[in-house]
Length: 467
Image 1 (cartoon, rainbow, N blue to C red):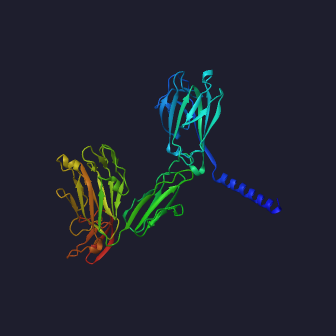
Image 2: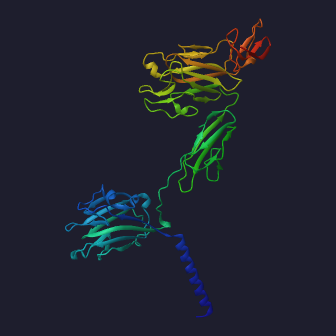
Image 3: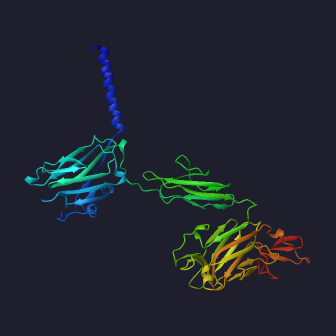
């Protein structure tokens, strides 16, 4: 053999070794084990229903179900198969994550201490493993004849009496994995949850999973780990769709949360709507109470666009303003005697033109007119279920107090763009007209002590009336 041949042989050997090393690193062997054993031995055969709970010490998560259990008895160090008269068998249906392309299966077993059982064997997935020893030993079933076939069952038939301690399935990374079930990160919550908002609205995103990182987009595309990382409120200046998910090491990423925002323009319809029969539609959202349960509203406020409604409970009485889920008519808003709601607009350019209420079906079904409100200003029309301001006034707030009980399903608030003192026309005789600082006209000829806006003729100024 010449020098060239020797060198080529060395190079070939080196390449072979390198290829073997690459294959070894790219297809690392993995395994999982199902271990048998019970707290105490028994003389009654296991069944399909109690096989796993009674005698599987380890690996129960890899088992979907066990069927065809015949003559299998619990032992403290495994299971005993067969009796002196009948063979034993069982069929393990593997869970989906345990269904892999197996390279070999190893059974830890021993035969029963009896001469006539010296030929004990296991028929595993239609191939035979002889069990000649009285001591525990590993018996390997190689399966090179069926490459790439996914293992779905472990079908075990025993001839003569023997014991099985465990079954281990070996496979490699290229043909499947058996990973632990990971907890999932909580889905982020976007607040407010979308809808029509004023330009400059701050949107917050939160996640209940401590330590999770929130990723988000503002153009409607699905977020990824390369998207913006949430570090503080997002300002909505234009129409946008926010999507977000959260991730944490060692956990499955969350589902994607989404919220679509439309920014209100000056030409938008000046109407606000509050659907108390659907609390989850309110802003902020309220979880709907269970039947015959309540959500108390004292001190709480809801907003829609430029309108805010706040609730104030009466000082007396054992029942206060609430959202109530009745047994016959769903959810409604209930104000009791003395409870009040304050409706106000946040924009000084708008005044309240009209408030229309929709009475709850709970009240209608009883034949009673359960909608009785006394306004601080303006007029409440019981028949029309509507509040309107007094003539020539531009109220930016009104407090409506319940007389006895009022049951409300929804409320629509219409605004008037011509609000404030700019639209007030003075009397022809130039009599002074007084308004409080919210723009509400004072009906009394002599207002109580306080700060007011006085309009007389073409002039308006602030005045302080002292005690």
